[in-house]
Length: 192
Image (tube, rainbow, N blue to C red; front, side):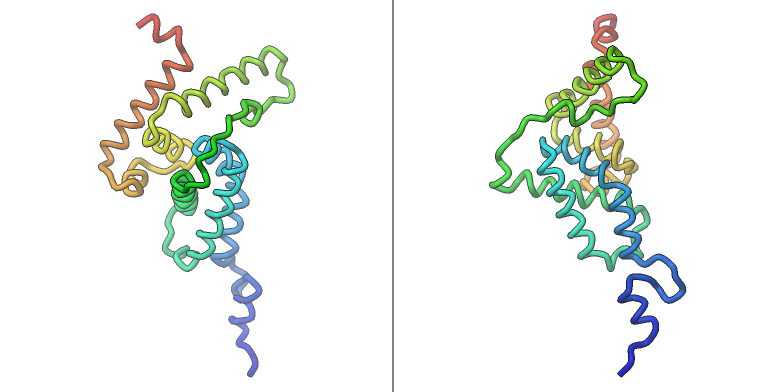
């Protein structure tokens, strides 16, 4: 029995009229977000290797749930949610108890025309920010910050994902910003 044209097109990854399929959309979104997802997950998991593993596991989870894609309004937010949940699962698992130190060089994005002094200053600022996120923030604050800044989720989306009121998310974000301001601008804190 011959296959219908629509079936063949679906198997080949495109609809009959050439429009992008859910699978194409998911692959494209993951490819576009991959570097940002990994750098965000490094803050959560503490090292790049685990972040890559979490991103890969999250892609598999998203792929397995691709039937939900037509209902997904904000694909970026959905992917970040799946990644964060995957990272949390990794943190809870027994084999993940090994902690590896973060390397400041992983976070330094050097401008090609920056002077050595500017590069050093940027490296030091990024290291202070990284330390503040990792050392100063409670887990729930870190999650709110990274989902808001890197995941670009709204406060409402974060609250829904975490099962808490929007006011709690906003309070935690305010707390994060105060802590980060103190770490990044210690001279400002001393004047107050």
